[in-house]
Structures are given as C-alpha cells and as structure tokens.
Image (cartoon, rainbow, N blue to C red; front, side, top):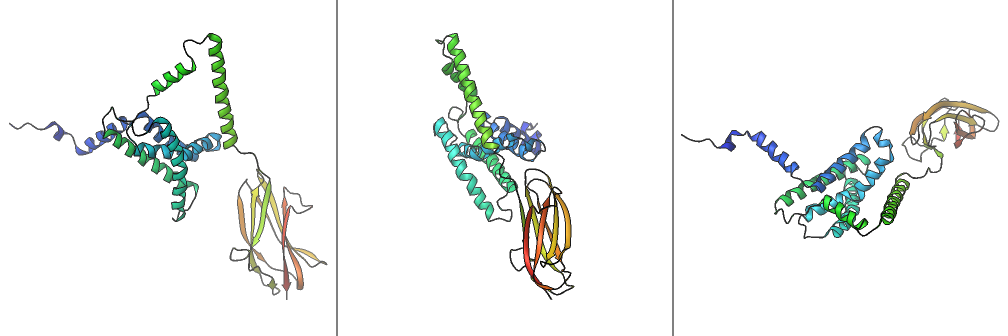
Length: 312
C-alpha cells in the first residue's frame, strides 16, 4: 500500500502562508524594529491627532537620516564580519543622506513630483524591500556568521561600563545624574530642531492675469464690458483671519466700489478667485485699487495692489 507523503497533505496556499509566517518570525530583532519604525512613521504622518505632535517630526527626521541607510547596509552586509558596529552605524547615516535625495530626484521626473505623499511611500517601500532582502540574505548563511544585535548583552555591557562594581554609592548616584542630564539635553535639542520657532506673520496678496501669470493684466476697457483678473490671498498669520476684499475705481475725483467679497482663511491656507471687473464710468489713467482688510478693520487696507486702466 502506498504511503502518502506528509507534505502532500498540506494545501499549497497553507504551505506558502506558513513559509511567510516563519520568514517573519525568524526575522532578526533589528530588522523588525526598522520595519516597525517605518510603519509607525507613516501612521504618525497620516493618523489624525498623532500628526499634530512634535513626535511626528522626530520620527520623520530619523526616517530620513537613518532608517533607509540602515536597511540598505543590512541588505548589503548580512555577515557580522563584513563591517563592525561603528562602521555600520556611520554608513547608515551616510547612505540615508544619499538615498533620500536620490529618491526625491527620481520622483521629480514622475507625474507625482517631489511631494510628501510620494516621498513617504517611496521611502517606506524602499525600507521594507531592503529589510526583506537583508532577512533573506541572513537566512542564507549560517547562524554563527549572521549579523545580529544582542540587545541584552549591549545593555549589560553598558551597565557594567557605567556602574563598575568598584564604584561607591555616591559615584553611582552622580553617574545616574549625568546620564539623565545627557538624555534631557538630547530631548531638548530634538524638540528645538523639530519644533521651529514661529516665523514672521504676514499675508500674501496678489493679482494675476487671466492666464494665471503676472502678465497680460486688463488695462483697456470699453464701458459696459467686463474682463477677468485672478485675485489671490495666502494666510501666514499663524491663526484664522477674516479678510474683506474691496475693489474700487478711483479717478482722483470719484471713488466707487465695483466688487466686494469676504473670506476666512486658516493658517497657510490659499484662496484664489477669478474676479470680473466692470468699470462704471469712462476715463483715462484711472486707478483700479484692490484693497484687502483684515479682522473687520475697514479704516485702512491691510494689503493693497492696483492697476492703471483706461475706460472708453
């Protein structure tokens, strides 16, 4: 009687699933941490409330300056004898600084361009691919030759270095204070770097021609005709601001309003609108004023631009 092979009784899909599961279970802790850090960075960027904290900037800084380089080094040098720990850490920073701009340069020639979303996606995919390649290459060599980080041994060595058995109680207390001071200094430095000071408060106010460029402004009108101009406002006031836009025609004798609008913008929000200009009287070299008032203060324009127009 034929004996059925045990492996034949396992469905192909289940076999592949078990292989993938064992592949990730056997992954070294440093590769797991790098992959988890990349995924956590994506979460901090896109998850509401999390993306409003300085932790997002801190994770993003590490993601740009260290993580891609470390994953690439892990893929290139799977053996522990290839390079030592200091060289591995230094090259991780160097290659990250090289890889990130190259990814941005490549994106510049794609329809997506150099924007946050494409860069985040590409850096994450690059990191995950390098981690998978590194894990595959490490599993292709013997356990004794694989590079791995023994975190327990590193912690124990650091503890013995910081607190030798020969030190007295006072020396150990001073050492703890010194370590806490260094950690506090690093945290303060990180906070200063990732949370920049509030810059100058200002509002951009501009007008563009019908083609969206700073040219071909309408300057010649026939009475009763209307011509378009694009008006733009950008809020850099670090707060919500309500603006009043008033367009007046001024010939030094008569001042009349020909357009008004009210808008409320959040910080860094941009507003653009095509405004149809229709002068109400004839004249030469009349001043078409675009006045922008802020916070309901209508005594004097906060920003203003103008055109000189002729109306026949």
